[in-house]
Length: 150
Image 1 (cartoon, helix red, strand yellow):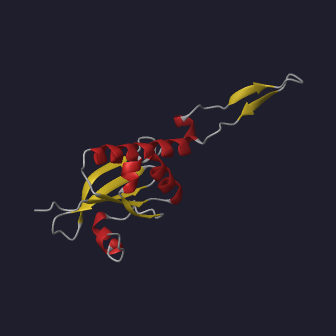
Image 2: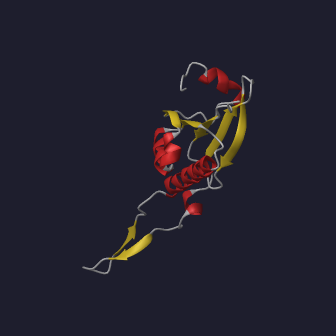
Image 3: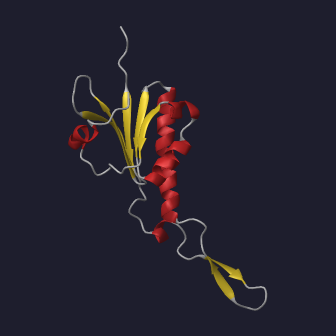
């Protein structure tokens, strides 16, 4: 008897992620797992340093603020997406799904794809630069019914 084809739908942004799958014979989706970033609603100064570093001017006694190279919020989003990708890579190694469908805003989708290992990337059957994180689970079947990815 062939085993059921298991497709996981990953819905993510830089602070929230939900992985869902269709139940056996059920028209709706069931949640596999959900992630929420602990730093999603923190201010930048709460994530990183309160003040930028200082630099001494070589020509005179002036000092200048050194702007950080990355925005703390962007760094946290990238770290969060990396954690989601790590989860997907680990579950792929355990054989828990056969195919992936990815929905995320463009910058998050890029970071997610870049963080997946080669085997997990090969299981991505469809991806779309859409933020569906606020879409209720009950509305997901209606939203996805016209898409074909198999």
